[in-house]
Length: 152
Image (cartoon, rainbow, N blue to C red; front, side):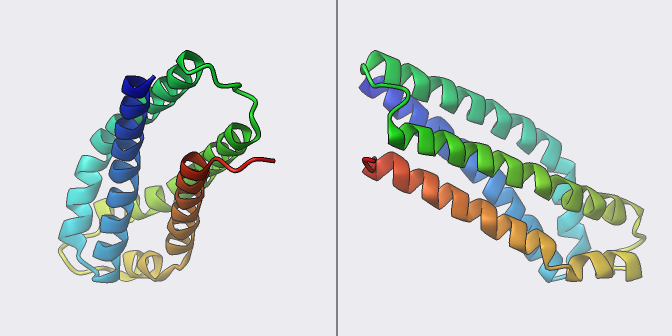
């Protein structure tokens, strides 16, 4: 079980690091109005998305394998709570995608390294910051549940 648990933790940390790290990089580049950095982010983002999805699927598979091999009841309260939090995190991630796609289009159509009016307006929006903050809150909650395994 320990090998599966280790693989689960490594894969999940890889998935989270790729997603959250990329989003934070993009938001910081936007805050600084660094169009070049945003272009670089969007050039890499499809690869990052594929890698993070692969790591997430592998992490879930390793976690379920660790639970089954370890004889855990897959319907224990803390595991059900973790499932719900993961689903909520995926929903928030999906809600973040349209905002990042609008930003991607604006960056691709922007001429030069200065943010034009349309791009500047998108960069001022608080929505991506709010969604990424909520996403991080879900991740913190998931880690807390997985570490402390509350009983109820």
